[in-house]
Image (tube, rainbow, N blue to C red; front, side, top):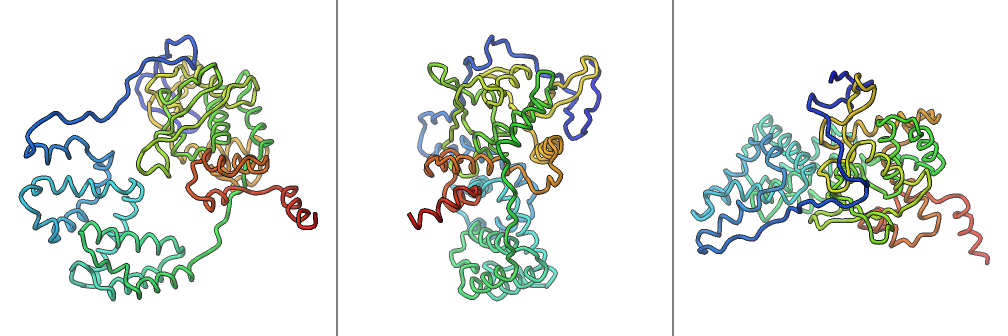
Length: 411
């Protein structure tokens, strides 16, 4: 089969063979599949178990990230807590350090490592001896330097958090970031750099239905149907991109009595201990129903419940069949998803697409729930928010609801 590049190069797959269609007769019929879990350690002498326990549970997907920052890791391991470690842990101290680093998400680790590298580079440039803990005065001077070259208060917050994190990995109890003068400087710098956030507009139900009309018609391509499915699921279940991107076919389970489906969310921003979250989607016969669109998309994609396949993946255009095929079992990237969403907005006549972002789908769904008087606790559970403040940032009350509040004062 001859493969040619799709109209957008970022959506092309590799040269691997396209995934073969599933053999199930129904998309939402369960297929047997294995569940991966941590097995218990076999019974063995206590002196052998103390270190093998670390080998049984390696850090989750963190080693490739840590390997990029061996210079910072080396500095940490040279500090007294690690350099003077007892013999029982001397052979596994790097593994223990990786475990401590894994307490943060991969994204946070990346950000902190880069900020630590900038801090170390500044110390070298200023010919300041690299001695830890760094004095409060030196930290204050560096924060002042960062303030003079920054345009956002978030830079100050991340820089301070990174320096504090660096000292905590060295097991230093008197952290210079916690000193009163450094805290006062941080508040002052953040006030000076703070700008009100520009909130993206929520997507309306009318706009969502227009996208479905445009991209989920009877003669739509697989790529168009993928856009309609992504948009409708994100709007209905208030998914973040990282949540929807990680969903596989074996994360979907039919509910009893054909009530709908349960979707396990394997990775969520607020699920830091990986306890797991679930979302529910009811059955429906409506053309605009995300359940119907997901059913159509999985059938056209050639996957069924139980398959270890990502739902949203890159696609490649196949000239032989004049159609799109999946060629890689990997999640669709944030950048590509954003491009596809902007293309969909342009297709329905939205001129200023920069008023929207991928969060506009999550915000639009939450706004509709709030304006339909769904209880707040259900909205928070549905959107996996930790706090009311976080949830309220996504909700834009309609004019009718705002006027009702004013009227209620006089009734």
